[in-house]
Length: 256
Image (cartoon, rainbow, N blue to C red; front, side, top):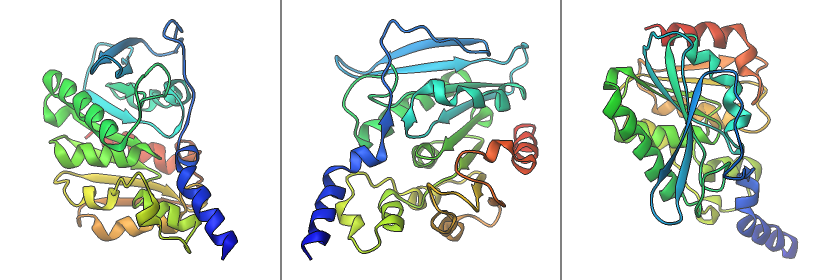
């Protein structure tokens, strides 16, 4: 019983450490990317500033914009290698860093992450029509993308390696603890998906060691009949973009 309590206390107080692995960058740090890009800073108040990079197709054709909400590690530089999947199909990619990641500043909270993500969607909506905005979430970012999708009108929501909710994800690792009550972050992706009235596509691999397939598969129950849950056999949490099934399907979605 004592060991159970000690582990429970550690899980509660260290959950930010388990959930987030940011890497900060100095404000004067200079990005170098293969794709054409523009860096912008979005001030929210005296302490909160979101750093975002806009990646552009190399030609002048624009199908629209992909708002890319990345995972829980490092910063934009870790995920920039994936933007070619979208820019080659004529989409701009707008990728923000969450508070405490990269050059983004301020205290990180679930509410603040939502608010900042919504603001970026509003910026996109001022420039692109709703039928030209695709929301894309990867890993941790899937819950953020799902929230934005539940609050806005866009063309499509695409999720790569999503989770049912943060408490449910913790429960996959520590099923003997009351994770719903212990989790500071909730991010109920399952609830948000039920509020999305446009197409949803989910990619998940059967060998995912970070967000187990069985935990993500529960999301099938809340999808619309026209939505898709695409299972990638032998896919892990980090390599779905290397599979032909992922590449072919993503290209098809982006060309619709």
